[in-house]
Length: 183
Image (cartoon, rainbow, N blue to C red):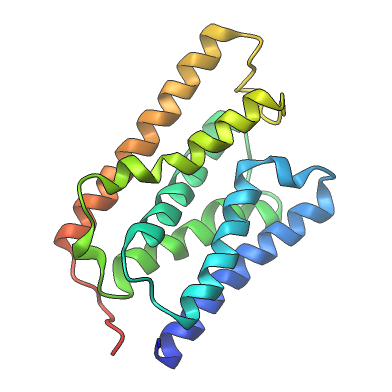
């Protein structure tokens, strides 16, 4: 069972993620087809669960952190996004920063990250990409499947970014000690 401080922190992270999704859903009819909203929804649900019980493995926390780093780093250059709307700030800056802070500073399982975890952490974005192509979602202008060359190049760049971010988290997790250990 987590301490009251960790429970409150994780519920704050979940609330920020949920608020971003709720605000985006008010603005967009098909909000549920975008990776940003789905990633934030996953953070909201998982952080509520992690507020109650710390995961036994760093796999889930690392996967969520890796996904949010990808969402944050890819949004502005790939989608020509901006941070003028509150939902965008929450989904692309605030929540990713909070999730990263949680991974680096809260809990005690960072040092147990394994070398292969970053390879597993790319599975959620790859599943989304498969759905994106098969369902012809066409959410992102930068990921136009009708232009195979640019599409392949951008997907390769995103995959490299996801792997680099994941292995960066692995390195940080292995060397950093948490500022706050529940217990």
